[in-house]
Length: 103
Image (cartoon, rainbow, N blue to C red; front, side, top):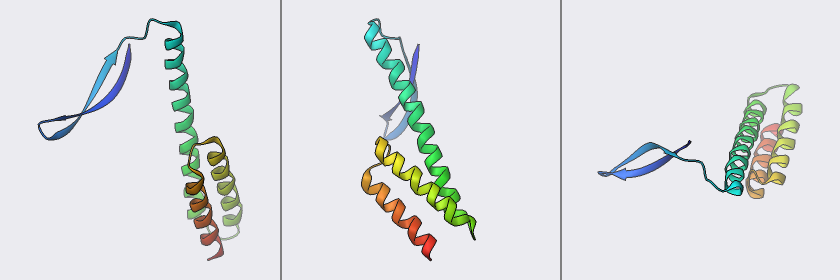
């Protein structure tokens, strides 16, 4: 059984409900479900790692900061190359990191 969350408007309030559906019967549709779940999990892990590296780079001080900022910039570039974040978002993040390093 597949389970996912939907959001409904009931009586002027946004309600979150868990919905269960059967797996598809067609072989290719089953594969798409599995592939989509795997990609979603991978994207979530990569996005979390990106956020962690950015957080560490912002919080760092002293000599350690330059190495952490370089690592964070590399993660941002990788995320943009893989389509995890938009290229303008990546440029904005890199600019903010460089600005904090130079300040």
